[in-house]
Image (cartoon, rainbow, N blue to C red; front, side, top):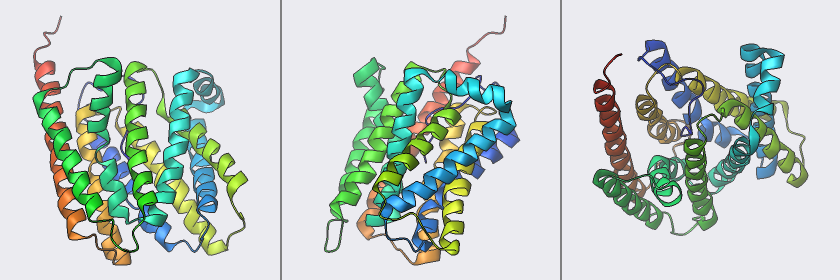
Length: 307
């Protein structure tokens, strides 16, 4: 899952621990689709309920250990409307991810998600007037071309247009969440993600055909929620405080590479050649954009003269 924002004060130095934590978050997020394929539950809403319930409880325990009961209560109280908007967005994308993976190859979902930073740049230009460089415009064009190739290769017999629509919705909603965090940089992600997970679980409970699952599936659902979604978020928000945001974004792209790999190794789910070709184009555009952002950030840091 691509990151929306970090927590805490801006990082001043690059820390090896921060790098390892962010890489760990990318690894944790990358195996979500592979876990879902092992779960023998055929009701998508049941999957959403248990995954988001476990994720929400994991994040709540994480905040209680990190901030204490008083600090955790303060985090929720200070969310405000922007934080609530992020929570609702998180609830939507958590639900859409499970439903999309049920309908379309995991590679399609994560490669759509790879476009989030570029969609966010486009939305920021439209809604808050942030300028876009020529390199960014080129990367946006390349991403749109790559997505077109991917989609054209996923519309054959047995394909799910709804699954592709849900995958695209994840990227667009996440991009919108990114713009909100740019406009309100004080938003803390952990309480928003926790609240969003519990909101999604509550909604799913009203829609699920059943909630009782086998002990084996319950263990897999715990891993799907706590060790995939929850742990990934906890690792990211901890590690991203220690390293520059551009580096954190670059390291986060490891998720997009590992997720299809797990599917090939564990489930023999091999993407089509068009999906691979379009995905390579999307990832190349993303790397170009993120490297450009990292260069700009490094150049800006060097021009700052200590007082």
